[in-house]
Length: 581
Image (cartoon, rainbow, N blue to C red):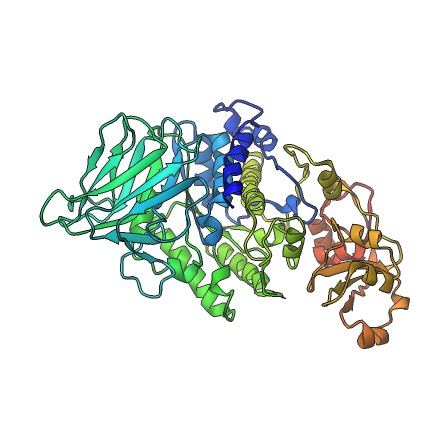
């Protein structure tokens, strides 16, 4: 793991080298400039890049954020990304942060926390040490002995000899990252802090006794930025008994660029965040223009999926955020396909559907990461490409980078749409089909590009069926069972190798007469035939989309896609389509 962490700064530096055009105020409102910088390190055949957009039903609710992004060269754009273990490590949000700051400017590192004192892991871009005894409360704890704020954790000490220290990886802290905000309880009984930031400079004394301040933080300005920050507890009066820390914020002293804050605690969910009593006041102080809510899996991973409970918690979260920052754009993000042991969780799909419904009802943007990352059973494919760990729940560092890249590019794609469709009051992928889904790729892998863009030839006059892989199955045996070659089976399912796992669903095209329903009931119970009634044909004309065609004939996009063996929504003029009812 340490070896992986040492390689991450190399990747970040590598990414920063690929800005093909210098940033100017004009380039920030240029759709072509944004498109040129919507790049991917790799592409994968199971990711639905053509759907990688943030959706909304009312442009007035996203307009303030996108309008501010236009002027990021002269005013700071603030983002808050709230999550769980996927976000605590910060490689998802860190990848998105670096991508956005590369284009729109760097407004600071954002929120950090003395995780060592809270006895948990730090993000990838800094290490953290502490001395002395610290008690802690995290949002996942059943009882909160300390008040918890936006960081999701609080630490407290009664030991005046305690300390905590941050050492950032090279390149994380830029020269103008001099503004420090310390989120801590102000009290006459609070210890002071002494900040050591340079061997050549005098430490800075910080008092935390100002009870008249309405702000939940104390702000200082460093004479110079530093990639090492050491906070020493200091008792300056006899009545001082304790010190309580809720978080540290590092930002630029310039009022421009993107300040991307990310907060996550291992195991956190909606219920956890809703228990944070200081969440609202901290949210007001942070004043984010965009709040990304990236939670859900821990609310049902080990228990029963109660739809009403889930709906209630989502609505409470949205209402809490809107009460604190009424003008912020709220982006609700669903979860990725996940396994518990060897069982695939259909609850992930259920959660995605519930979240989308509520997001649109409550005037939020929605990011359908579940579908974009591949949908149900796709985690097996992520495992085949070494993007997820064997628990098929947590990703590898490479997988987190892929996820962060998708988040960043979804914002880029939607911003590009906002620039090019000023008259549009919504962005819904069931109505909008991108005209250009070309994928600019850094350090191209020709094999992956070929697999991702290759037009698969489907057999004619044969039925499309699905087969759910059972325990003990292997690819060659399945191919023989259905009378096709292993290579053909791999091409139909875009498989990189022969590895398959129980629960994986394979698509096949074969002669229905060879596998009648009676035989299916006896020996092939996992085969599901999709017999569709073909009502007619349609020749694609200029301006057609699957959604428009479905509306014309009173059918659905999925039925047309399945009847014609389509793997994307892209159409060609003159193409003949079967219309299924």
